[in-house]
Length: 309
Figure 1 (tube, rainbow, N blue to C red):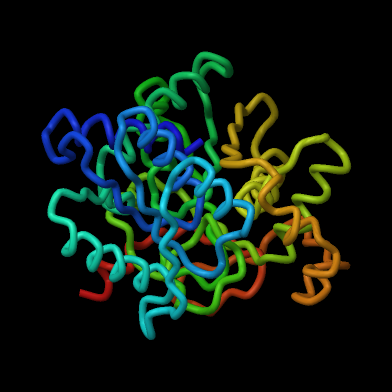
Figure 2 (figure 1 turned 90 degrees about the vertical axis):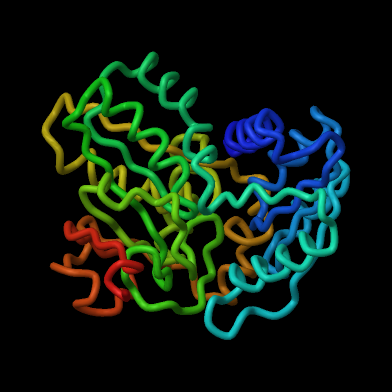
């Protein structure tokens, strides 16, 4: 899915002259955007350096190398900002050493958001007016980009954000996070907080259950984001009136998670098996009410970066 914003960000940077011919692309990513940037690098003849950390799956690292990208591995998290801040700091070092290099800055680049226009239009073409949109939230790109376009057709669309426990995005305190691809330990500028009607936090065991249940019952599945979104989308389908059109965005497939979500030994090690979520989430009135440890819903959406000022 992130091929779309990756190509769009590179095209816009080239058009503006921010990325000179042959200039290196340097970006921090947990994997998916890196693959998209490797594609853009091949298409437009730019070398690509992907800055990641030890949590990136070996299969993704190997694919990035096969696609011609250089993988720069950060081995220690930042004491406050975690892995994402450590990766951002490494990106800054690489940019300082190579003046012609360009950083897409997916967390804050509005072209990341704009890159999802085509996806929104495809959803609208296939489903008509969408009443409820369920999106995982990491950089904030696809939730903002898709909702913005769909609300041009249906201003009453409800946007449900899905985050992981331990993420700071919606005002919870930072904690160690097992799930990758959603959540953050920093505050991405692309997140459109005003666009969200509510947020749900999901725990890793709940996402694993949803992923495996999808695979066993619908012959489809994906990674952490897919499991979390599927859990919340199922709740939405049970709770909104009949004939409500609900769209849930599944950002990836299951292949890169064969050794985590779909590996029994890994799941036992992290106590992710033999767990079935409740039919209804816990509910809190405000993100600061308590530290959530399992599926929890909140209809008060705050921008913690503004609260902390």
